[in-house]
Image (cartoon, rainbow, N blue to C red):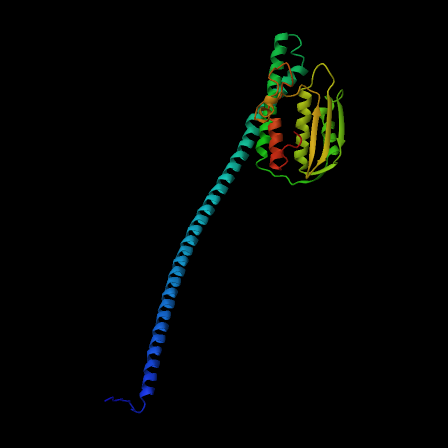
Length: 296
């Protein structure tokens, strides 16, 4: 005998549907909660990272501030040291002018008085002695003058302006220091660039030093010839000072720019009043104005 039981309870299918819906809803809620937890964890990691980065940035700013403070302190110290150094140089310059230059001038004046009174004509030994005193006093005077000129380069920074090269060198050639010495000298000026932007006082000293250097080192067996010219180069002006003097051996071409370095050590050659400071002063002037190589 076969029996079939059929549940005919009202709402049975509806209850099952609700049960499945609740189950799915719970799953969706669980998924949403998991997503929220993941998002919360992600935000916490981002927040933690941001806090760490912010702390690092703060530490970096503190380090930079301390470094800037130390740099400012060092800069202030260096400025004070530079001011002190400049004051010492100024004082040294004054001392040299009063305590070194003045005795040298007095010796020169004394020797000249002996010449004028004719006291050296009767005794050859006296004349040799007075000549030596006069020569060495002049050299000491020139040496102090050139050292003062070198020290002054650190104290004064003359402004650059447009100057005419031919006018500058012709003015120097007319000076009493050179006018007689240049009588038998051929000087040729060829300025393709007539004007340059440079401190006038520096250019005057440069030409004075170069003229004196050429005259002091001229060859005895041939007339001195000097050529000064300027050439336009890519982005700069090249100034050349050329003579037919004894010249400089290649191994000494850097040494001659050192302080108290003389091209000629033989007292019978060149000038007895050469100090070895002229080219040093010249180089410092052109380096100071970033004209390194000009006129050399």
